[in-house]
Length: 143
Image 1 (cartoon, helix red, strand yellow):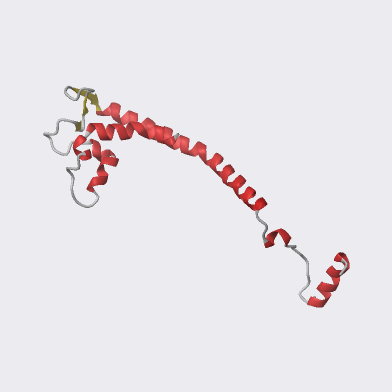
Image 2 (cartoon, rainbow, N blue to C red):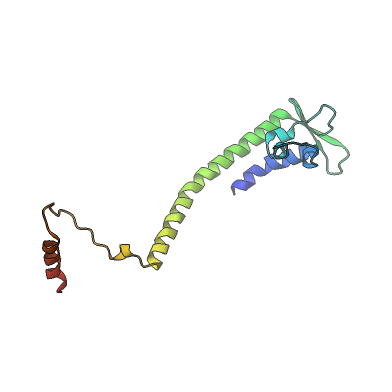
């Protein structure tokens, strides 16, 4: 679900700057720029497609003509997509937390561990010996 809200960002990035996708960048982490907003911007003023500070130029379906969209519209789309992505993530936190809790309880029910047979005893004085403690609990289990 969260991925759906990030699709506009991904599409704009790949369509706006095709040079990045073709691998014309070089060095270090330059190849990762296609996954950031920086990948939308024209690398040189002579690039046909991409974004400058006022407009984004996209190819149409045929790849010949261009479509110009104001940068403010692109920024609004990305802002709303990011907002919905964060809200979707925040809404999923209680579900994921409850799911992890139920899986942990299910796993605990299916596995026998020493904790299943542990007894917690409180209020034992510091001067009680092991023999006194054993004698106290022996009268309850019959051994």
